[in-house]
Image (cartoon, rainbow, N blue to C red; front, side, top):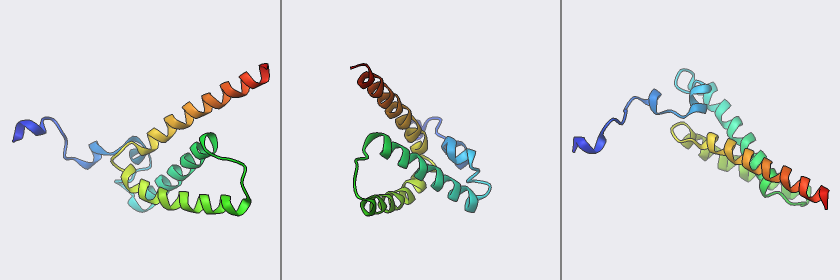
Amino acid sequence: MNFLIGNVSVDPEQRMSFLAKLFAVDKNPDAGMWYLLIAIFILSAIVYNLGFARKIEPWQNVVIYIMLFIGCIILTFLAVFLPIGESLIIAAIVLGLYRYRLHKERKQT
């Protein structure tokens, strides 16, 4: 059974994602988790605005951001060991490049 495990580390510090290490979740869990939650929420809001947002009523925006925040609470717990934040950064970059190219194309025609 040991051959299935291979070189997988059981040390939590080695298994943590980059953002979790950046915000020192292992050394200061209270502040680190809050910073991670804020970062995940901001990145999620950027991805939402770049890729999915439409012109809607202000009260509908409030409801969407409240639901986004609740979802980000769950994502924060997963983001300690999984690359959730890093994936959101890549998604924001890709959607930003797409928006820039779309804007540039519309400007030419």
